[in-house]
Length: 335
Ligand code: SAM
Ligand code: SF4
Image (cartoon, rainbow, N blue to C red; front, side, top):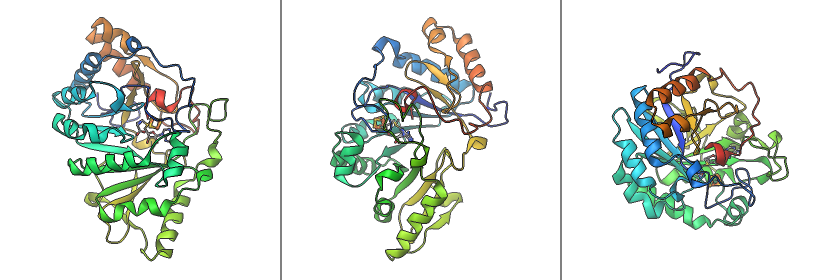
């Protein structure tokens, strides 16, 4: 394995461990009415571990756990440990909203988790409550402190930017000044059915293209006397598995990154497969093609698991061709 049919090396798997969450971000999950999958419809941790063993033997070396909120699923620390101990797996990471990090940071580090991405879309407590529907921003700040205290490296802070929210982008970039935090602006992606009955109502016009965002942040930094954003590359960039463009505010300990799935898509550098919590392998976030890997995993048929892994790989489209609507919510795919 290793290469897909478009010549890309695919060695990174994003594994969603649950579709549930302790928040309800407007753009990700409706407040009510999400049909939760029953527990036995989700892959057990034993099944995920088995898949990781097979995937590692086929060349996958990096795993990220995501969701829903991965830290709400009981036993996730043990899963991290098992994945970390799998021969061939070099790095284990997690994307989390950070709320339960103070509780689990130490255990996760001990279990072998290297790095965390923490999602935080605003620094304003009221706006945070609005976006997440009930979250308390102080919980996330405490989660960020815990991530730094226990030595996760890098610690990245992801913010989905939406035109109509009018977030304070400079305040966010300034988080990178005094601590080694790598803040990243992420283009909003209208996945699921955002303009449908239970959607957040935002459309593609709510996405601020990265080039525009960089200009806005740069101008605000200059106006505030902080200097211009300096592009950085090579070793100065935080290590990552994705396609962010990185900059630094002069003298900052951390960096400011920009991730664009739409305006400058990175399909030619795509390196990943996604696994949903109910055991469907998804070759592309923006394409509803999925492969049932739960059935052979449950049947203990390793050969078929391997075959489906190959089928999913060889079905990766060359790019999303600007078709970005999906039938599922982000929380159901695993963001
Ligand atoms: N609960 C965890 C968290 O919030 O980090 C992990 C799952 S969440 C689905 C993963 C990431 O997807 C978050 O950073 C979230 O902001 C992002 N996300 C969700 N819906 C999105 C959308 N429509 N466009 C862009 N990013 C989105
Ligand atoms: Fe939960 Fe993360 Fe989705 Fe927010 S973005 S609702 S924290 S899964």
